[in-house]
Image (cartoon, rainbow, N blue to C red):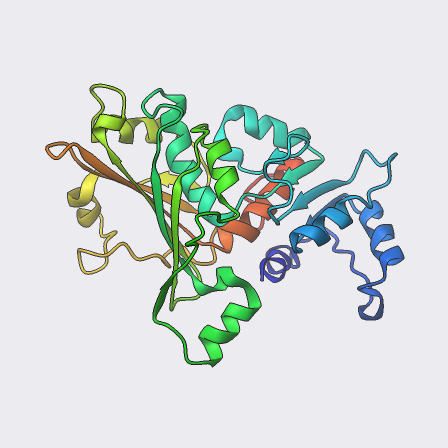
Length: 309
């Protein structure tokens, strides 16, 4: 699914040439090795083991080809750069020079996007035990799950990940700088694309004197000038007034489908000393293929917005 969407985002561009193996040679190892070493950028949309094998085919003397991997294989590998340019100015600078980029997972993009600025600002302390609740469109499960939801009888909603060992957890802990694995509760429902990632926090877990306004200020400053990440008005009342809640109540998860955008929300209740942080994005956009194309643009020194909405 990610590969199809990556191709859809770049195939009409006149600044790139897509090189592909003929159908009869798509699984031929020699052909694939040859094309990988001929390309300026390779985006791998494969299972982890297959990505690791393909990445190993880059010739030792090839210091030109950029590999962008969409699997989980390299996301916490110190020899690869994490492909979330909005993480920090330093991260963007790394990606501009990188030859090995690990594309972030969809759920971690929301979670890290919400928490990392707060850790860097000293509001959220390293080691804080948090939970992350998230709902995604069924396309996140790949072709198999898409077939079930589009062609078979299916559940209206489904929670999963009850082993508490979801493959996205290591990158959540690492790149949030919390360095503690969150309790992650993912869910899917009967819409194809989109997601909302939520992180509930008690003020007692945060730096003394923290308010919803301070959290909103930190996030707003962090993402100021971003082409793709926006911080929405503070609090439920302002979000309602901006027309961002369906029926003045519901944060709809599929609003940003087919874009590379991510919206951040701060729903605070200072009296109750609680806040819920929410990130809304397209699981196949900023959460996958859109991010891959953004990283491709950055690695090639192009305008990062080229080919993206």
